[in-house]
Length: 319
Ligand code: CP
Image 1 (tube, rainbow, N blue to C red):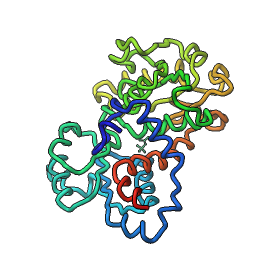
Image 2 (tube, protein in one colour):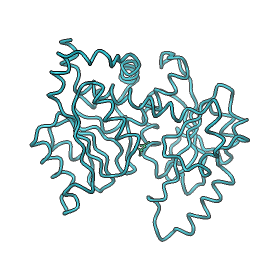
Image 3 (cartoon, helix red, strand yellow):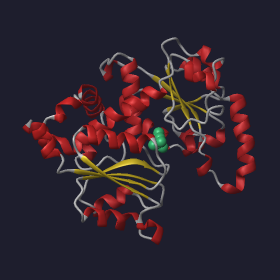
């Protein structure tokens, strides 16, 4: 991970070699080896601090489980119990936590401060667990892992995938991080969504736009549904957004009828949480091509691989 000797804030600098090494480590991690008493003793000196200032189920729990399985200890700080409530900034919060000596931070936030700027004031490694609409790097890595697994772990340079994103792409940090990974691998990217939810990504010549989701599904090897992010839509446009959601359901929703157009070995993913009946119809959960819970399962392995990249090298070498 070239940009992450200390931190992982985006996927831009993760070339094919770094990505291959991350997914390989995720696949080959043997958690049982970390139950060795000597390793546990050494690793329990290191603390992973989870700082989640936006809600999370999958990301926060999978980072915690990954760190615990690796033998590290974990502390949790959420927005409601933190001094963020008293007006403390994210930078001050991390500086104060750093003074207590954790080995790394995992941070989710939606505020105006940027982790890329904060990083220069902090010497503790930081992993982004989702930052506003800017990015969600470990989600993109677990998405890649899930596709790679579905292709029987073919070397990444032999894979030729066409990934179609359907939903609220403009407000999606998941899409942004995925685009960084997929471009670095040379995979093709398509978007199918109402123009309001494509935003300025329509200007990216790398990305193919499909006005009709049916055409996109015929083209794609993998389709990713993206959540309609009502909380990031301007409140004044609530009524307009509602009619847009209805338009989306009518014309873009991934349902079993439309999925007949996706190839038999196609893959259906969604980072979650899913608005069932909006991005995906409920019957999609039962389609054998749907990998949504597999993505969640793989999230533990990928996050463990990232934590190992940052904290594990030294102790790994001694084992
Ligand atoms: N995909 C994802 O980030 O889910 P959570 O918000 O539950 O972490």
